[in-house]
Length: 254
Length: 156
Image 1 (cartoon, one colour):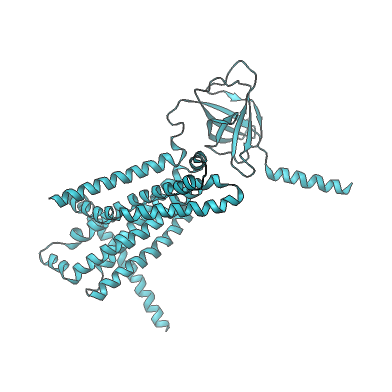
Image 2: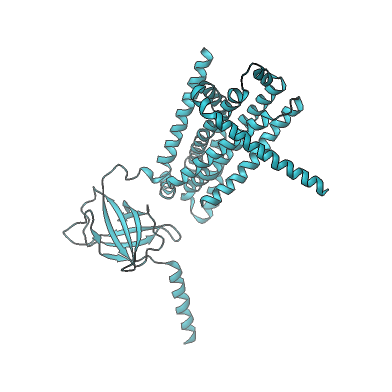
């Protein structure tokens, strides 16, 4: 029993270390890929970012709307419904925007990356590349990694903006909060540093979500079950890491 | 070829959209742009107690916001708080004997500085100081005073 726990712990530490080494390997190839194979990166930004826009816009709008509704109905009791704009913008810019975008990204794009790379491995395409003396890391993995890193902060900015507009729609247009109070309260209290905190988080989450997606895909067992397991693990591991990191970043920045 | 074009066009639009969203967030949701473009002049005031006045708190006169606090410092010689605030240049006829009060918006709201017009013929200008000031009303002190006075009332 104790021995099994010990083994599992050792295996966890080993995987964690291997992930770091994999990350360093990706970073080593990143400048080269970014400069010389920019076209591949652009294609991956399209794949992971542009194709996620509809999801991000719709989810952002509705998250903002429901947040506005909830905050309004609670603040109404204290006659403080003027601060709806402040509360929703604060929550969206600092927490909900970066975190939910990372989770949605993991579900929409991370799974696609993992299963694509996993299937390439299962169908021996990666081995075929190696046979042709093409290193699959800079050709296949790094462009996807970089594409994700570029896409997530942009998606987060779009998500947060849509959320605030959604809250505006519900609070101002439907519930009758004064439009001046809504924006003025927000502008008076929110600092540029609050926005920067959200951007910083989104960059970190972008790196983590992309790294875990390509890592799971690259290390998938080359079978149908292995690929499906890698896809599932991508979402689970990204969700856990993002939420833990979110707490750590918030705690260190406060 | 057509496919590459679509991808590049889509990505370009995507990045532009992102920059637009970022621009919206930094300029529209924060007070970043306020007073950045318009001409302002700096005035100082000294207070015994500023309560929770902070940089970026509004400065208002007759209820209209005409400026903003930009700096709050502590002067260790006179043991007073020195508040530096900017006023918009278009409001250049504010008497220099006006007095500054720190008030609270609503019962639990944030604090702001209010100027009350004096009668002087000379006006505030860049670098001048508001001489008459009233400290912030600290709610805890008020409550303490009230409790204390009702307490001593019972004893009599």
